[in-house]
Image (cartoon, rainbow, N blue to C red; front, side):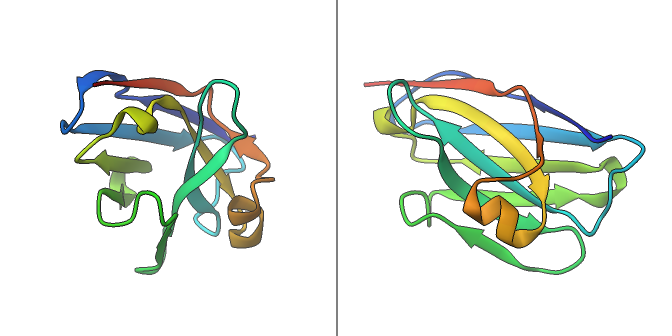
Length: 123
């Protein structure tokens, strides 16, 4: 069993920054998993944002967030972060943390998901 707990969401003005955290734990948690962030805006499908590996420098971003968002990790804390800069109103969504194989997280069908954290960007 894997638990993923997101935090750090909130309300921010356009152009501002937020940092999301995802703490991973559980009996079956594995560093073989890739960790990813997704988001879902009202009335829209869930969208891949970024992913990384616990054991290498691999990262991958959606084009919509590249150069604005940075995914990182703290192995000692089993925590993954999403630093979001230059936020836009269209970044407003519930942000979810996910864990699974690379193919599963990029494909959007990861096995393990957090409960989500709301990010609202005002114009």
